[in-house]
Length: 121
Length: 110
Image 1 (cartoon, rainbow over the protein chains, first blue to last red):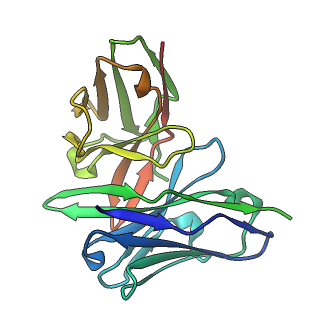
Image 2 (cartoon, rainbow over the protein chains, first blue to last red):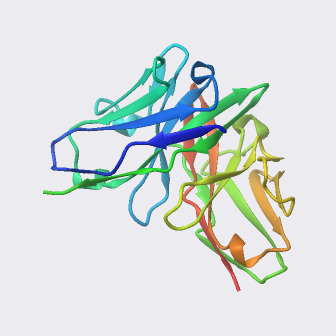
C-alpha cells in the first residue's frame, strides 16, 4: 500500500538545524510531489512548502523562505526537509504528505506519521 | 496575505447533521481552489476525507460529503457518530504549488 514513513523525533537547540526524512513506498516516487506541513502544539496545520519528486522544483511558504530547504533522493524514494536557524516557535510535529495532481484534481494523500521536533535550550 | 476561514468550533448531536465551512478572507471559494478536507484526532496524522470539493477519499463513509455553498466550501456530516468528534481542516490551492490551510474546526458530538 502507499505509505510515507518519517524519521524519529528530534531535540535541537535554538540556532541549530534539523533534517527530517520521509520515505515513500507503494507507488512511483517520481510521479508525485511531496508537501511538508507542520503543527505547533495545540495549533492548526501550516503548509510549509512543496517539492516535485520528478524534477526537484520547489515552492516554499513565504514565511520560511531562506530557512527551509526541501530535497529528494530518487534512488531511495525519500524526501527531506531541512529547517535552519531553529527557534522555539519551530517546535512542532512535522508531516510529509504526497500531493496528488491528476486530471484537474489536487489533494494530499497519504500523510506520514509525523515527526516531533522540539527546540529547547 | 490570504486567510482561509473556518468555524473554530461546532457541536452536533449524535445522529444529527452539521455543515462546516471554509471561506476566504477576501473573495469566494470555487472549485478552482481544489478544496479538500482532512480529519484529525489527537496524536494522529490527518486523514483525507474529501478532495476536489466533493470526492470522497477511499474508505470514507458516505455520511461525509463536500460541496460549494454560496461563496464557501462546505463539509457536511449527515448522521453524526461519536467517533466523528475530531478536528477538521480544509485547505485551498493557491496556484504555483502553494496551499493555505484553514485554522480548523473542533467538532464535538454530544
